[in-house]
Amino acid sequence: MATDPVGDLLTLLDIERLELDLFRGQSPDEEESQRVFGGQVIAQALVAAYRTVPDDRTCHSLHAYFIRPGDPKVPIIYQVDRSRDGGSFTTRRVVAVQHGKQIFNLAASFNVAEEGWHHQHEMAQVIGPGEVEDRSEWRRRFAEKLPERHRGHFLRPRPIEMREIAPLHPTRPAVASDQHDLWFRVARPIDEAPWLHHCLLAYASDMALLGTGNRPHGVSWMTGELMSASLDHAMWFHAPLKFDNWHLYSMDSPYAGGGRSFNRGKIFDANGNLVASEAQDGLMRKVVKKPKPQYRRAPAPRAP
Image 1 (cartoon, rainbow, N blue to C red):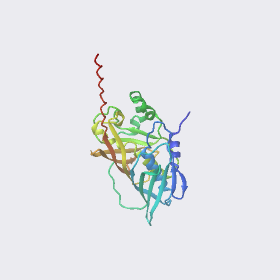
Image 2 (cartoon, helix red, strand yellow):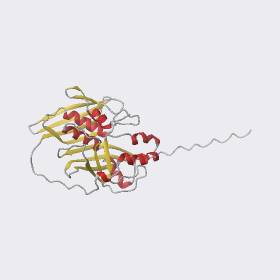
Image 3 (cartoon, rainbow, N blue to C red):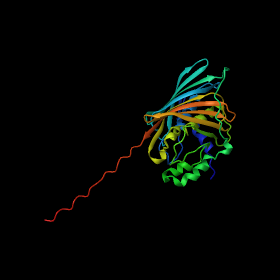
Image 4 (cartoon, rainbow, N blue to C red):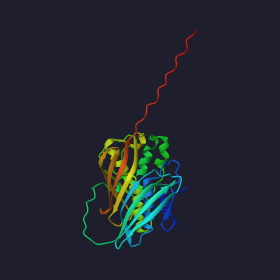
């Protein structure tokens, strides 16, 4: 049976409006998922905010905190607070709730398009996406070497096509540079409103950034030695984008310590225009395995 992961993602982001500023989002029906993917919550919250903002304004920045793991088995309620509607800028705060508790909150700012001075850093000189192996092919090569509990999630069709410049072994990663580059895009052409491309990019931005801080240490969450999770996530949108075209995601990790890693990303379109930047603080905690208790066999009773 043919699958359409991109269509499924678009459906996922088409959250239900319950009231003027109240929305309900669902999660994919995936048995392997223990928690909601962070990019999904960012994207759904941004959709909720966008649906309360005038059409002439686009998001230029968002700041989000992950407070509790999301439960993929129940809906997520998004409450939008209309913090400010100004002449040029609009501000929204979105709180995501499950089981009566906040799991996530987001502040986003929107503005009207303006002319002004312009400069940007240049895009890194890397090989093009046509010269890089598709990540789905890379995953198939490693699938049999993974623990069985990870294989289904590892091989499932994905809505975001990714081509990593220097991928590491998923369970035996070598120590490598924190510089991490990949090409990515929505996996098929789409005809959607420009603002939704911001939401799709926000969804995809959480896919690889967290692992950037692992690279200098040669560690992977798949080995059970590392506990990792996104703690906060900030994005700045600089220019219009069409995310069904190739974009270069250029990441680095300037610092890790205290059980956390700090990771940064710059996103360029194929023409070298810087369209977005981001930063993320992530949990990077060593898993301490408790030794198994040793039981001594009781001595046999002495004969009378």
